[in-house]
Image (cartoon, rainbow, N blue to C red; front, side, top):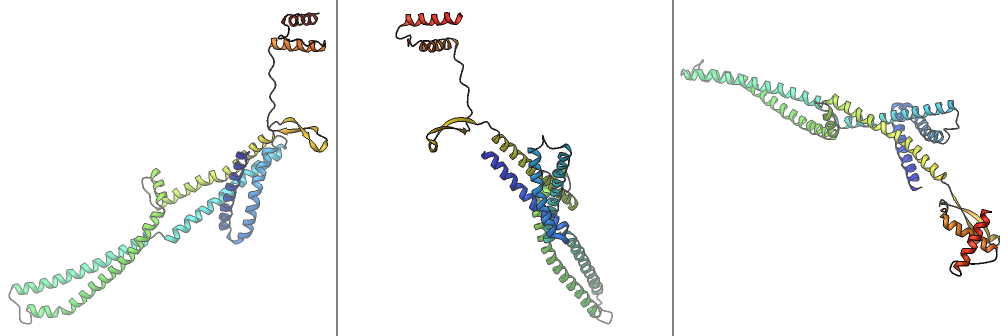
Length: 325
C-alpha cells in the first residue's frame, strides 16, 4: 500500500511541475490572453490525469469509440503540455542569453576600430621618421645653417610635426578607451561562455566545432529530451498507481470468527488480510485410524492403542470389515 501511495504522490508531483511549466510556456506564446490560457491549461491537465485513470479502470467495459477518442485526447493533451514546456525552457534560454548578451559582434567591431587607430599611429610615425631623415641628410652634408639648412628645415616642419603628434595622441587615447570597453565585453563574454559551458561540452560530443548556431541546436535537442520524458512519465505513473491500488483492492480476504460483545457475545465474521491456507490432507494411515476412532466413539467405547492394543486392533479390524460390507 505504501508503494502505491508513493507512486501516486510522485506522479502528481511530476504532473504538477509539468503543468506549471506548460502553463507558463503557453502564456508566453499567447501573451495577450495570459489568464485564460492559465485557466485552460490547469483544467486540461487535471482532465488528462483523470481520463488516463478512467481509461485504465474501465477499459474492458468502455465502448470502442469512447476508448478511442479518450486515448487520442490524452495523447494530444500530452503533446500540448510538452509544447508548453518547450516554450518555457526556450524562453528561459533566450532570457539568459539576452541578460548576459553575446558580445562577440561588439568585440569584433572594437577590434576593427583599434586596428584602424593603430594604422593612424603607424602612418603618423612613418611621416615623422621621414621628416627626421630629411633633416639628418642635411646634417650629414654639413648643411646646418642657412635658409636651406637643417635648422631651417626643422623649424619649417614644426607645424606638421605638431599635427602628427596630435594624431598619435588622439589615436592612442582612442585605443586605450576601446581596449577598456573590450575588456568589459570580454568579461561578459566569458561569463556567458561559463553559463553555456555544459551545453558546449554536450555539443562537443556530436560536433567538431561549437559555434553559436551549433550551441543553439544543442539546446533545442536537450529541451526535446526533457519534454519527451517529463509529461509521459507523469501519465504512466498515474496508471501504475491505479494498477497497484487495484491489486490491493482485489486481494482476497480471509473470514475469521470474532465475538460481538454488544450482541450477547455472538460470533460474527470479520475480514483479515491473511489468506486462508487449506488444511493438509492426512496420510492414508492417519486418516484410517482417525475414522476408526470416530466409529469407536459412536459405539460408546473409547479404546486407544495405549490402553489395550489388542482390543484396539480388534475393533479397528471390525470397523474395517464393516466398511468392506
